[in-house]
Image 1 (cartoon, one colour):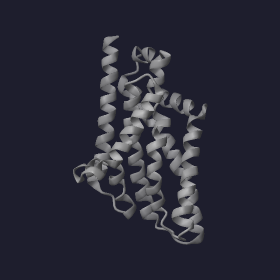
Image 2: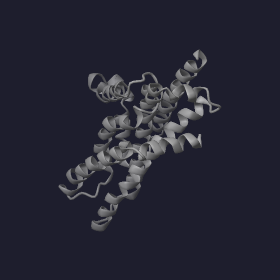
Image 3: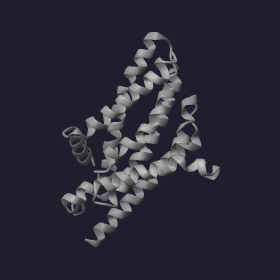
Length: 226
């Protein structure tokens, strides 16, 4: 699995993909930092992440749409399916690599927290809890993005499916309160208060595991067919 992680990390940073993801996120994060903090002279660092959570809807597919779809398109998937490496390790390796890119991006946001510390005393506990919730949200998005990438060999289609489902989950509660618990962003919105909601944390993890398991099942079936 370590070999897969290294291969994926190289593909992210030996190509523009990783830099585009980090660059787009930090550009938008800077804009929200100015709007939510500078204009209101606020020290609430955690609320920038609530605004920034919308960014993930549109940029996570940059990391995930090529994860498996590219392997199918180039024909390298057949080599992976017939290799001694298990499908589970393959999928988890791709998932962990994409998550590491997000973690690197989150570490970059400490620069903004440092700026706030220079002017006052922001709430470090709330900020860390918010970042934890943000990471859970990102992990959920990544797992679904990899699932979408596993069902098509076209990266664009995988990206469109991912963004479309994210937007659907985002707006479902506006149609009925029944769908409130299906909105990942709504669940994340509780974390900026500084409290870790156990139920929401379990939901994020369960959603991620479920998507990864379905991806593994899809790939196992393709392997058995071959």
